[in-house]
Image (cartoon, rainbow, N blue to C red; front, side, top):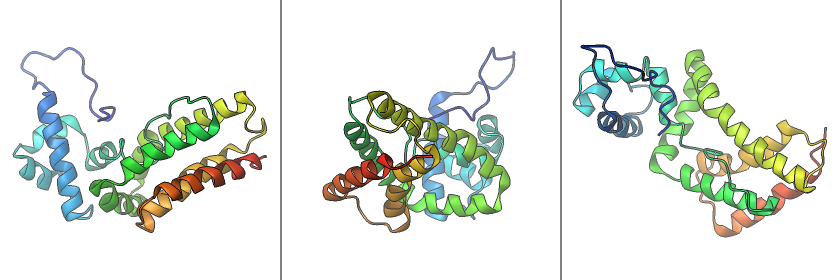
Length: 205
């Protein structure tokens, strides 16, 4: 779990509360369950504290706001969460990338919560900003790194249209798993890799 949205830990002042990692993980688990069960509209720091069996102060010490907490919950869910390994080929990199994304996005939490979070982001500028900074930008960087490796190997044109290429890699799988709510079979994954490579070959500025 990415802890970048928690307060930075330095020297603890005398008398200050200590952030216990095991309690943080327990609160995160409770938050995931709560969000998946009641939905984002009813989710609150109060309801989370009650479910986790802690005081609200314990929650706010870790996340300064409801938006920060929600953003932190999705840092390890979705397309492009982690950088794909350098397999030596664009095809291999895409296979690894899609495999990791399918695993991440097939969880009950992802299926139930991701669509709601995107709807909430359209209404909540603070949440949108936090998700963009902590989730979207790092994931975009992972995709760009994959593309740059392929360019260095000569597998993709040097004048690649990055924005179009990122959309081609991330959007189809997100649509199938999150919006259409259909599984990504091995056949689908193979077709997606082949179609993505073909599209990237002509993705030029």
